[in-house]
Image (cartoon, rainbow, N blue to C red; front, side):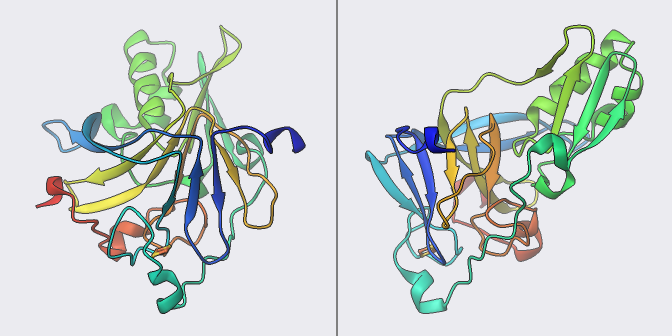
Length: 236
Ligand code: FES
């Protein structure tokens, strides 16, 4: 754990307050794109949000200056208690075995981005992963999953399959459902708990910014039910 402390790029969770992002992490908006069947199939790059060496990002959902914290969390009495497990993703996963691929599925991380629906769904595609088309689509879908709930293991290559990301942050926007989603944390940025311990460092994770997740600090899709909207123009 100690080796994370001096790394530059880090998100520190404050008790009942914002996320503090350190290390000049780039921040942009990423918009969920859909196909003709209304299934999520691509990420559309939105505007770049200018941040400095460090910034405080709202996690209570109530700031008047989203995505930044404006202190409102103190006024509304935000309870940001972290309830997520610190176990490794693989130890929180159910593993589904297919012929060429294994699917690691840790449902508590689901941010409801719906990249796993096409072609009968990632589970069905994994089951038929000896078929090259099914395998390719299963990989596209699992790699599209922003939260990293779904991770595929390639049995022939003997390794997990991950998209390549720079260390960066994105604000997810979901125009199909007219809601704003979580903060997408990419490229292995450290997430430090308010108690000074660390969550598993992963290539992709999603952090709650509506304030209502039952799996804080991670998103559990509750922003959809909550109708969370940060005012992004893609939602109009
Ligand atoms: S966390 Fe500070 S205003 Fe939301």
